[in-house]
Structure formats: C-alpha cells, structure tokens
Image (cartoon, rainbow, N blue to C red):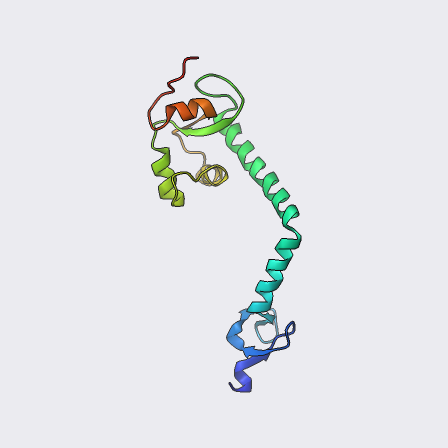
Length: 147
C-alpha cells in the first residue's frame, strides 16, 4: 500500500487502508481517527458496561410509546371493560399476517407494533382488548369468553 492509501489508527496504532476508517467530514482528512475495528470494539465494550442504563432508557421510551397508543385507542378492554393486561387488537382479525408483513414474524409485535401505530398516525381498525379477550378472539372477529 502506498502512504497516500494508508492511515495510522490513533487507538491501536496500526497502519490501515484509508477505507478502514469511517467518514468524518469534520476531520482534516475526512476520516475518523480510529479504525472501524477499534470503533466497533469500543462500542461493544461501552454497551456492555452501560447495559442496565440502556435498558432503563428503553423501558421508559417503550412506556411512553405505549401510553400514547392507549391514550388514543382507550384504556379499557373493548369487550369486557377491564383496564388490566391491555393489548392492541386488529378489529377484523388478521393480526398474525399483518405482523408477518411488517416485521417478518407473526409473533412479533408489542413495542415494535406500538411504534408502527404511532408512526402511521393511529390508523383505524384497532382496539384495546385485555389479554384473555384477545387470546380468545384469536383470528376470529369476536371474543368467545362468557362475561
């Protein structure tokens, strides 16, 4: 490699190809001072050291999104009226197929689905149901529990 095509990483001190450094427009040479390997290793170690802090932030963020969703759709089960263990239900069924299309997994949903609802302006066709009513409904159009 020629001197023009290499750069020394400030972290590991190894000469590497310039393409092994992330673009950084604010830098004099337009590249990060650390190579991609060192940045990746640092990020991994940082996330391991701060895992609990990150998870706490995610719990707060997810609770906020969930609150926005239920503030829009309601805070009681549309079937039995309870306010415990609420979930968002596809009114006309087809939830598994819809989650498969959105996330590649029919069992996926929860926080990802609540973000999708928020990002799509809280579309019609959804309602809050408690877990027992939603499970009873399954892919049908109504709850099969006797209330």
